Image (cartoon, rainbow, N blue to C red; front, side, top):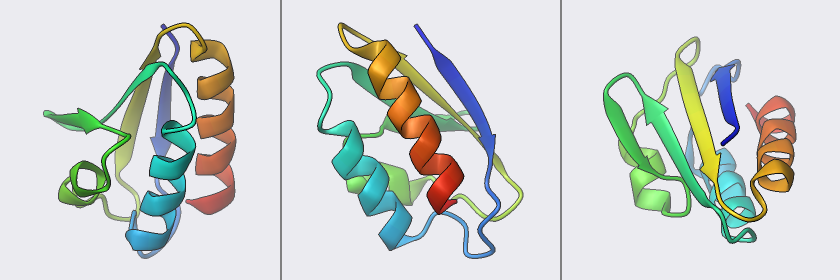
Length: 85
């Protein structure tokens, strides 16, 4: 079960555009993918969950992937985080 920890670099935090990118990407995999900030955790495949975390610049998120294609999903999400946030 790969786990990614990432500090948000984008000054706008996770806003609609990068949230949409992450959700669309996550929905392309069979694995369960969760995103967490502090004590709040949600499904990365649901845009409202991602937006409700209200992640700002400089805050840290954790993404956990569990399932049949977890290695590929974690790599793709890690790359998307680095490129978009």
